[in-house]
Image (cartoon, rainbow, N blue to C red; front, side):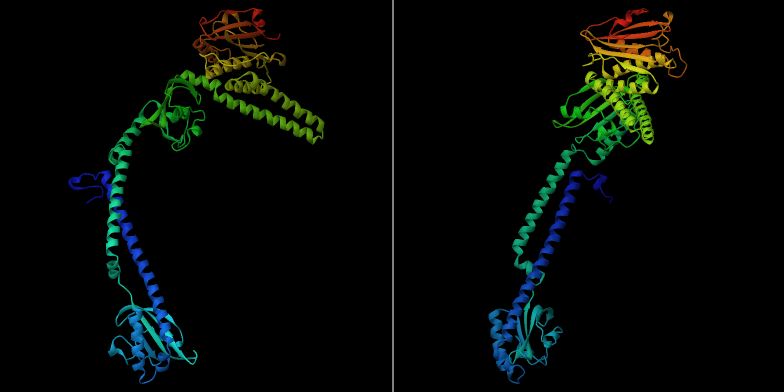
Length: 556
């Protein structure tokens, strides 16, 4: 019969499997423990009997009547009564006195007196040794002690005393403790059976009274659903480790490795799932950017019997256009900024190394302080005035990128951002400002050094957020002012052109903001974005070409 089957080919219920297995283990443990206990008890008893026999043998060997009569023809008449008296008094099985020819002078069985001792283990005793031996003698298995008999103040051996005590068999040992043994065995079996049943029921309840086959089927169904659904799914447990991550989730976040078992923050550093699990709050259809992908995400805590045991997030791509926007101004731009910063630092290090090799140490020190001061001043300014970390990081990266392109990017000293308007999230602000700066730097690239200048102002005003980007590029012809915000329009050749300003318009409109353009051909371009703190502007402002755009906080 196959394992797991009972009569009528029905699977054995999990409850009975666990009960039988655990009860069988308990019975096995009791049997092994009982046998070990009896063996240890038997060994201890034999040691005690041996010590007792040795003490009696030493006493007999010291009796003067024994010492002086062993080996004499009529010695039996003296030795036998003395030995029997001691045997009966000490409750040993036998006391045998032997002369040097191994002839018995005493024995409980009268017919054995005068016969030769043939135990096989008596040899060392005739060589002046005393010891304890275990052997099967005439009266059965026994523990016996051998002690030499000496005279002349212990200088001459005249014989040997053998004292034996029969060792009890296992049956005799069990018989002596039968009632207690059976009671303990019965009690142990009852407790084991009760514990096995309780354990089986507890495990069954933990598994929602489901059988292993049902659990396996549900697991297969769940995996099939998770991996075929069109949304990304990530689940975590109490330890904030990922328990489920389907293929769509891996595709969206561009993750190729094995995620199950890893901390969710290792796979998605800014994941909000731990917060959802800790607070128990449900979040539905929240827009966010994950790994350059605009997604809608819902987060739900997993409850079991009133307690939170994990959390699940489902998410999906919002638009292909948002994915392109993030590619232009999101995470890849920050990576590019780090690359630029690394390149800039390498150039600085090469310069410092050259000055040191030329032994122009003071100039090297001045150069180091100048470089550090410039970087620290910019970082301190952004940390103090731009309180959105994503925007501060974007500006720092763009500044490094501009230096690499030999463009002077100036962040207006009046810039100050405490918080974004409620309808404008950080990712949208990054897209707007990133594309405006990218467009401005492209406009001045290739011009003479005096015109490679871009200025930006970001400031919280009482009624709105002001974003202004000014460049000294070639400007925009009046007839093209209405085209620059249309998707696909660009004055330069190349893939993915004509998208940036289109995205700016889209996100500004979503935030209920307004765009103003002030541009003069071959002179400058100023783009101003106003995002209201509350209320609503029109969809798009008028475009104009005059010098009034230079009066909004810029130095000429």
